[in-house]
Image (cartoon, rainbow, N blue to C red):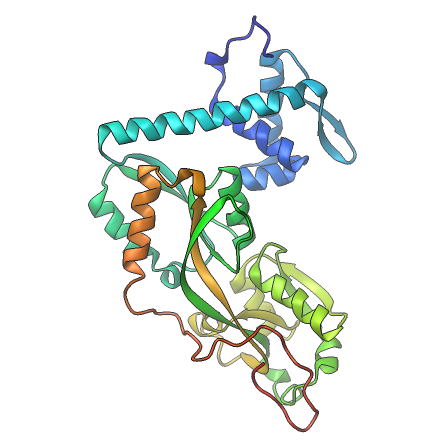
Length: 329
């Protein structure tokens, strides 16, 4: 229990959210990434909360931050408080009959790909009292943020396995293996062992593109050499264009960023991943979540701007015969 000498009223909700993030991640840096703040800020908030409560919440060691026994007891209470504050605001919004406040919107791609400007223009006209914090991150970061409550609603690619998250598929994005234009002739005949000998550029582990690189490795029995790991698409394509490696990317990224003259999509592999909008299922009745969801779905009812493959192929890539290249699998 919280000591009687300490009043909850002086505690800020952001401190409790920070405490929960550190408890879940057991690492200050990862918690800071989830909260989209700095590691020193997270450390300072935890120290301030411990000073206010008069108990040590974490044991700090070489392996990270581990909850103390008091910290374990208070973790459940902190979660209930944060959830109760959210529910309280939802109830107030419903009673007021309007949508207002600030919503954290997770963005995993370029605004034109997500039709973000159309969505925000529509939302602003319909709900002028609703404001937004736009957070950029990989699909994995967006999903983690939705699940832990630091992101209200967001776009992501790939399949979501969390039962806590409700989602709606908006479109499908076609993936390819991207190579430097200078390697096009050498790699024109599908040969997975040849690709294995080349350096690779991985995206962040939470990105759907990275998961497909790993899937290729497993299905083809390859040991791909990771030269770089990058969490931003434009940087990845610049590295490919400069001849520094291969990667898996969305075909539209090559076109949208004008890399057609320097980057080629190899015929070895095609797969499509869903692009979805997601939010916590428990927040489905939140007026702001409903408003954003409905406007996103309404905008995406219009003809898709993303290239949709005529046939949705299996992501499984085959090992083709050397003289009989198969361009899709």
